[in-house]
Length: 307
Image (cartoon, rainbow, N blue to C red; front, side):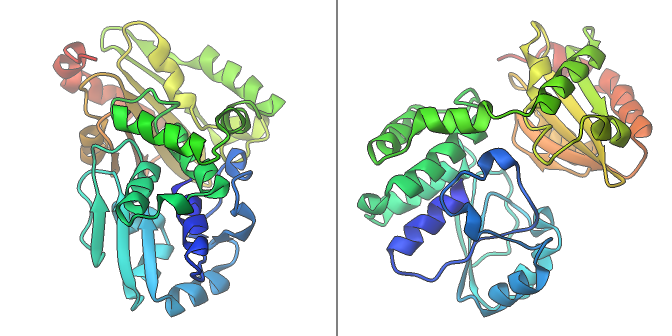
């Protein structure tokens, strides 16, 4: 949302613009204006590398460290272009020439709006940009539920709607386009979810074979980690997934339990206070066991977490 929102704005400024992602992203975002112009490095590495090398300016959006963008990271680091980082994750790495950052912002899409406004160009936000930025804010705030959703966030989304953002269409395209396989996988996940009431914790794990059983597509696990938090008394949830031999972990919390610190310390990850990610260079079972064994160490923090 933030990248395509900026893309559509820069086109109106008569710039030549390319959007490059490290890999694919969920199909529920592929309705966004400009999606058909996105270059995925994993699919077209030579084309992506050519554009990175000859760029004069590179905007880096919604990541705080080059390692977060995989094989694209070294290419950005070597590029001679002026680099501008726009991000809301804490502790941004110092690799850019300019930094537009606030960890208090709800989303990078909100920061893109703020930047456009600061430049005096709000009138250049058309329906295309507005739809992208609205969707970016909506998804990053879990539909306006996270703690960084502020009065400013709602004022900005109101302005985006006035500029042409189709809020009901955005919600429908993101949240109401599930495949039957994904809905059945959700039911399966909720059935096998593990709950540790004594720690106020719940988690879900999915092996590669389980994902295959439900014809897994990229994006199918989006949002699954949030479901355990809907259980009364649960303040910390995790989702473990095994894909292509890698163990990816999503963490979510309510209140002041800091999953960013938890992920950084234990699972080579990071993110926000209430939303973070990590990884494990082990088997799925070993990663889950390591997580469970850590819970007693954090019991006091978990029991005293306040929303």
